[in-house]
Image (cartoon, rainbow, N blue to C red; front, side, top):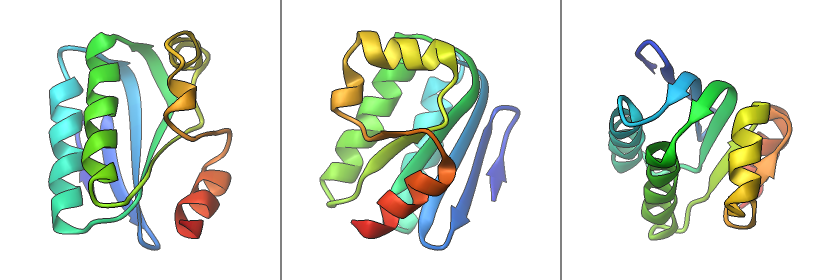
Length: 117
């Protein structure tokens, strides 16, 4: 398990679960992206990003999510967003990224979807 102040990576039965907290912006979006992609390079698994404790997400955070999404898609894996805070849900909805990413309300549902692929 890798952990910094606001990024926790752990594996759950063949799925990488990334839990974020605080702000996802220019100060940490690159660290988030590199941490996920580095882990994905070692073990190509689906990725779930939990966003319930994210109070703010800037365009840098959106860019990081899209970059991770494209890297996973190249290898036939999926990026799933789960448990979003109201602030993040609004950004994902307004930008229509809920048409790009599967968005699930619970981690359990996200894990079921990830394992079904």
